[in-house]
Image (cartoon, rainbow, N blue to C red; front, side, top):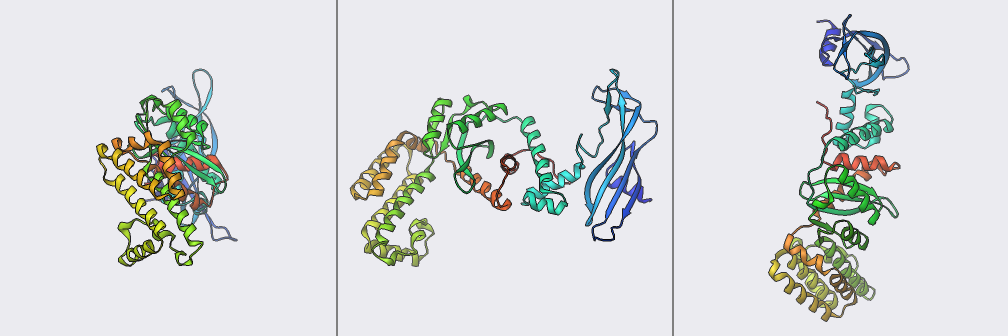
Length: 407
C-alpha cells in the first residue's frame, strides 16, 4: 500500500477526496518538524451546495488546516477547495468533510482540543500540548459551546438552584442557575443581584425552559435573590438551603469560640474541631470536645445547639419540624449568647422558606458542588482575564452539553 493510500484511510477520506502527496519537512534548527498532506479530489467531480443541487467546478481556492500532531511533529492539510456558481450566479466555496466552514483547523484537531479540556487541562496547558496559542483553544471552546447552547433546547426546569460564585479575588461575581433535577447549569450571568437573576432567566427562556414552569427555587438567604424570585417567579416556592443555614450557625459558634479564646489560649487551633460533623470525630476528638465543653460552658452550649439543629434537619418529619424548630429557637434564646440571638433573628426573617424545606426536602447541594467545580476550573486556569471564556468553560464542564469528542 502506498503511503498516500494509507493516509487517505487514516484521515477517513472518501470519494471524491484522496491524499495526493505527503511531505515530511525537517527543520534544521528545531526538533519539531512538519508533516504536510496535500488533499485533492477526483477530476470532473460535481459538488452539491446548500440548495441541494449539483454544480460543476468554477475555480479553486488554496486552503490550509492545522491537523493533529504526527507524533511530536506539526501536521498540516492542504487542498485546492472547489468553488461553484449556483443558478443565481453566486460563487460558493464547497464545504470539505474534514473541517467546519471558515475554520483553520480540522475537526479532529478541534475535537482533541476539547478532549484535553474535558480531561482537566486548562486553556493554557491544552494550547501548549496542541502547540497553539491558548486563545485559539478558547475560540474553539466558545464556538462549540455557542452552537450547543443555540441548538440544544432545555427541558422544563421545575426545581431551580440559584447561587453566586466569584470570578476572581475581590467582589467580582457571577450568578449561576442550575436544574437541580437534571444536574446541570442552565444559565450564567455577571453579577449577584436581581438584575443578574433576571438576565439568567432570560437566557434560560431563550434556551427553551420557561420561568413559569419553575415550581421550586433553592438558594441562600440573599435579599437580592429573594426579591428577584418573588418578582419574576411568583408561582415558585422559595426554599432556603439548609447548608447555608448550617454555615451561618457554624459562624455563630466560631464567633463564640473566638470570644472565649481571647481569654484562654487552650482553644487555639480548635476551630475545625468544633465545626466538624460530630459523627466523623475520632474517640480522642470526642473526648476533647466533651472536656472543653465542660471547661467552657458557653461554647459547649453553642456546640450542642449546632448539633441539635443539624439533627432536626436530618430526621424531622414535616409534621414535627415546626414544633422542633420552635423548641430549638426557645433554647437558643435561653442561652443568651449574642451570636445565637442574631442567628435566631435570621431564622425568623426567613421562616416561610425555611419551613418549606421540610415539605420538599429540596437543597441546593448540587448548586454547591457546581460552585466547587467552577472554582476548580478557575484554579486550574489560574484565573480568567476574559469573562466570556470563563462562562464558556462553565457551560463546557457543567452544562450537560453534547460536544464533539476525539475518537
